[in-house]
Structure formats: C-alpha cells, structure tokens
Amino acid sequence: MSEERMLEHARPELAQAREDLHKFTMRESVVRFYARHDAKLDTAVQASPQALACEAGCSYCCRQFEVVAHPFEVFEVQAYVSRHFTAEQLRGTIERATRNVNERKAATEAARLTLRPTCPFLVDHSCSVYAARPSVCRNYHSTDKDNCQKSFEDPFNTWPNTYAHDVFHAAMGGAAGFKKAVEELGLDTRTYHLSSAFLEAMRSPDSAKRFNSGKRAFVKATFSEFDSSASS
Image (cartoon, rainbow, N blue to C red; front, side, top):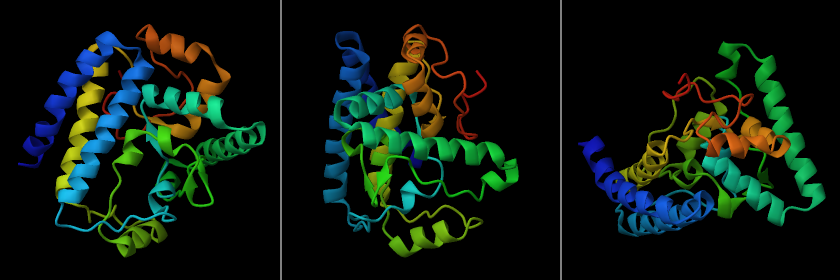
C-alpha cells in the first residue's frame, strides 16, 4: 500500500521530468523539478491532519548522518555557491566539508555509524544553500521534535519514524520519479555523500563532463552504503 501511494506521485513526476529533460538543460530541469516538488509538498503539508514539528533553527536532520545528493543536485549546489557565496563563505564551507571527509576516512566502518557530521552548508543552524538544497533535505518532515533529538543524541537509536504519512509519500514518490527520468538518459544517479562530492565538483571541472557523457560523475567521492546503484 505504501509503495503504491508513492507510485501515485512518482508516475506523474516521471512523465513531466521526461518532457523537461528533452526540452531544457539538466540545470533548468532540476530547478523546475524543485519548484514542482516544493509546491506538491506544501499542498501535502496543508492537507495533512498531522502537524509538523519542523521549524526554523531546528537542524537535527542536518547533523544526523552525512547529507547525500545525486550528481545533478550537487552541481546545482555548486552553481548556487558560485553565484552567491563570498570568498570567505566558500573557504569556510570547504573547510567544513574537508573536515567531514577526513573524519569519515579516519573512522572504522563500525565507528562511521556513530558519526554525527554537520552538513558543511549549515551555518548558525540555518541552511546556506536553502534554495538549492538537495531533494533529500526538502523531504525531511517530522511530527515529533523530541524523537529527532533522541535519535541524534543516541548514535545507536533507530532513525525516528514519526512522519506525516501523506507528506512522506508525496516527497519520496516525487523524488523517485525525477531520479528515474535522469536514470533513463543513462546518467549517473548514485547517491553521493555531499561533502566529498561537492569538494570534487569544485576541484575537478571534469566532473560535469563525465556526468553529461554518462560516466560516473565523481571518481573519488564516497557514496551512501544504502545506494543500490553504487556498485554499477
């Protein structure tokens, strides 16, 4: 039942994304997707009988696990940073991202499960790339802030499952629909850790070229252990 409800949102997004990707550039298509996605989630939130606990200044989801993103999302973050960040802001972001990468490299596989890396774009409990944030960040929504805090403070606690069901299905379905449309073009849709992928995108102009040619976008960046496409 849950899968079918997500498919109800995935199917129309897949159809629209296919159309966009044939008419517009990847970046234009991503921006159009984000606009549709945000509007859909706003509607779902307004219609949901469950009140959300998410509010400005609450950043547990930004410090829970390493934030992840698909290549087309990483490049949108990169473009936003290039347009809006000062040299000082960029230095600070790169320093934080590098710290996350180094901490992950130094940790054992078991220890990585207990890491609580702060997203390099989180500044004073606020997202510095909010308009260009990846879909996974747009999809977060909780009905119990205390449960989020409990999960954050206890590394061995399970991820909180207190979410608004209608919002969850709209969020996950829509994101899956757009990803599928990109995948159909033969492009990389792996789920990379944002810190390492962003650093590689900034340091290697060839990343975008590899992505556009259907190759793995990032050759050094690490990807999520839960990404089924990681080994392909």
